[in-house]
Image (cartoon, rainbow, N blue to C red):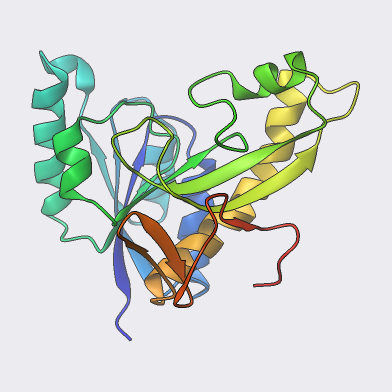
Amino acid sequence: MQNKRIVILVSGNGSNAQAIIEACQSNDIRGEVCAIISNRPTAFALQRAKKADIDAITIDHKAYDSRESFDHALQNKIDAYCPDIIVLAGFMRILTPGLVKHYHGKMLNIHPSLLPLYPGLNTHQRAIDNGDIKHGASIHFVTCELDGGPIIAQTEVSISPDDTSESLAKKVAQREWDIYPLVIAWYCSGRLRLEDDSVIFDDEKLSRNGLLHNEVTF
């Protein structure tokens, strides 16, 4: 099977992008990261790309007068790489419906909460403020609903009484670095697909909450 072509979209540090790069280098993912694209010129993820000899591209959203014009430029750049999968890894932009539909079934996102809980921002503090005992991250196919696409897999962490937003974020990030490359590996090996807005894994339809990484041996 030929390696799949991966384009990663980032806005910041890029720790998930780094985990994906390393999984490709070790052949845990049957894929190749062709480009890392950021909407922020100062994103450290671009340095990670250069170090790995991956195309590092900036499309600064501040240079565009509308969300649509930015997304048009972004789509053109992504399409130039003919990717099999587009991975959002801390990409802090709300995408327009046209771009999302263009990549239907080919775009994944990771969100730091146990969706459908806490879509949007400040998820760690919101979980603490709500008195939750569990928190985590979810990977889903991207749809036009913010953080509302079909869930593929989730990973859980416990919330300790002394956890802060920062300490909880670190716990969740450690799990993200394991689960995101794993899900991408499933996609690249043909085990995972989106069919009629349902997640199909190993030819079986998943429940709406997807697979729980902590309880399932993959």
